Image (cartoon, rainbow over the protein chains, first blue to last red):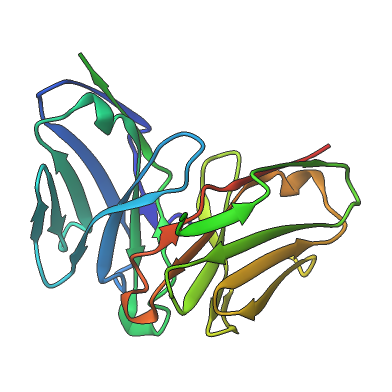
Length: 115
Length: 113
C-alpha cells in the first residue's frame, strides 16, 4: 500500500528550463509534505517543505505547490541547473496522529538536467 | 564535522551472520531513526527513538534490534542475516518538534551473500 506515489521515475530537462516533479498521496491524514534531494552514495537532503494550510511555498529557485483536493503536490525548479541532477523524493507526514516524526516517502524521480 | 555519520559505509557478509551498523549525530537532536531503502528504491522507516525511548517500531523482523545508548547514538544490530536484508540502511536525526526535517547519514550498503 503505497501512500505516496511519484509516477515518473525519470525526467530530463534542458538547462535553464523549468523542471516539474509530481507527487500524489492517498492518506488524507497527511498534513505536512517535504521534498528531499539525493545524490548517488549520499543520504537524502532536505530541500523544501509545505504545510497543508498553505498551497504554495517558495525558496529561491524551488517552489512547492499543494493541491489538497487532488491530493497532489509538485516541485518546480526554475531555472534548472546541471547541479540539480539528482533523485528527488517526495515525503509526507501526519503530524496530528502523534507520529509526526514518521516520514512516508515516494519512490523518487531521477532528474537529469542537460546542457 | 559530519552531522549524521554512520559506519560502515559498505558491509558484505554471509547469510546467518550477525552484524551491527553504528550511527552518531552531532546536531543536538533528540530523535533518531533508521530507514531502509530496498532494491526497488522504497525508502521506509524502521525505527525511531526519542530521547533514547523507542517511539516508532514498524513491522520489522525481531532479528533487527536498535539500541540507543544516548541521544546522539542509535545503532542497529541485525542477527541471522538473510539475503532479503540486502539494502541501503540510512540513519537520520531531527528535533521532535521539527520531526519532519530529518537529516540523513550517507547510508550503509549491506550485501548479504
